[in-house]
Amino acid sequence: MAESQVTSPSDANLDVDDDTLKAIAKVYSSRAAVYFRLGNYQETLNDATAAVTLQPTFIEAIQRGASACVKLKRYEEATSWCDKGLAVSFETWLLNSFCSLKLQVPLPSGK
Picture 1: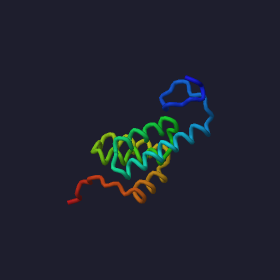
Picture 2: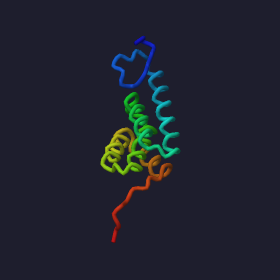
Picture 3: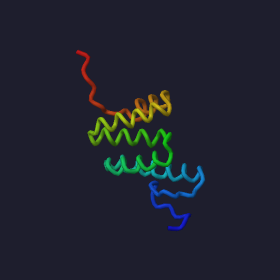
Picture 4: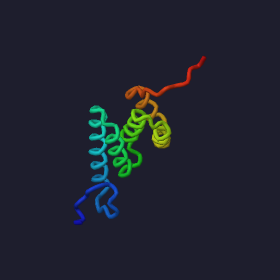
């Protein structure tokens, strides 16, 4: 494979600069958003995973991964994604997750 040819984030010998990695991660995250709106949650999760592989602190991709897991009813995996987000930025994670995305997670009743 030529050095300039990037086929997936799992390629072991990516020879690209940080700005290029960020741009590729943004593309994966944006496509994950489209898949989410189309109801294709497994593809959302796949692309969110690819984005986070390239940029481990990319909050938007982390949120998309968590949201996809909730829709797929993979609650333990969603918790793992949430932990990633909280490790990056507690305030940003809370604001974006609970205000913008409004995740519908079953909560225990207080009664």
